Structure formats: C-alpha cells, structure tokens
Amino acid sequence: MSTTGCGGCPQGNGAGWCNGDCEWRNSKCVAKPGVGVFLRIDNLKKGAKDTVLNLNEVTAYDKDGKVIAPLTTSMSSELRSRNGVKNCHDGLTNSGGYCHSGPKDQNPVLVFGYRAGVDISKIVVVNRVLPHSWFAERIVGATIRICSDPECTKKVLFSGTFGSI
Image (cartoon, rainbow, N blue to C red; front, side):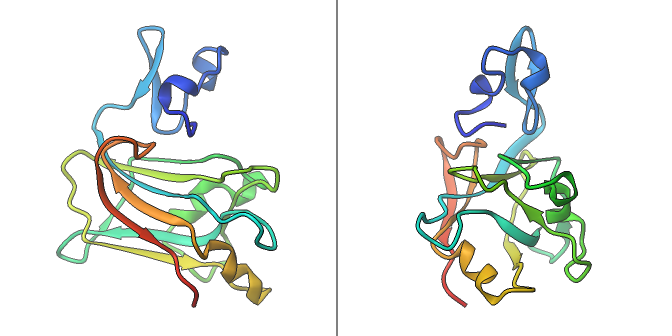
C-alpha cells in the first residue's frame, strides 16, 4: 500500500510491489475486491521526540460488541519484521508485541481494510507506553479515520484526532 493509492504502489516495478490493500489485476495495481471500509491512522505531528507509529493493538467492533477482523492490513514501513502490522491486530495487548513504523518514514500510515458494508461502531486503540512513558505521546495529534478508500480521499465516514492521555 502506498499513501498515493493502489495505482502508486508498484512505482513502475510491477506486480511484486502491489500489496497490502491492493492486488495486481489486468496489469494494474487495484483495490482488493470485497474490501469496502478502511480504518486509517496517519498524519502524525512532526517535531515530537520521533515521528513513528508504535501501537500495541487496534480493534474494531460492530454494534453488538463483536470484534471485526480486518481482511487486509498494511503499514507504510516497519522497524523490524518482528514489529510488523500483524502485531497491531493479534488480540494481545500485554504480550510485548507491537507494530512500529521505521524511523525514516516521514509520514507513517497504518491501514486496515474491512469487508464492504461492515458497520464499525467502536474502535479501541491500545497505545504502547512501556518501557518509556513518552512512547504514549507519539500518537498525540495523529488522525484516525474510517473511509470508503484506503487513502481516505473519497468518502470519510468518521474522523478523529488522538489527544493526550
């Protein structure tokens, strides 16, 4: 996935660079079918101690309080493979696992894709706060949105900003 959308994913490199919420179809990188609702966290504020996504868990729930599993997940970069996006939706909040974007990523982005027509009524984001309390401040000011496309350029269904704890 790329912040420029599925069309920008391959960057001229072909199918091997088309991934995340996108797939290679008819010689083009396009959104995966069946995915119609996207949760996106981005726009971290510059000038913090460091500008990285460093989260413990992100969970979406339906109106009955049931967990909605994402069909697709992507993060713009990873610090190490053990800190990948899979750790942000593994159902574990105290395991020491977390997702962490790379330190050179100027605009870290986390995107979860859900089936078309899903009704997300609640999102719980568990921030990583240990071993340093300043970890918690990394997310302050970032946006969280629910949209009809992975870049949130079309229909935004919900938009919020992370505040201080």
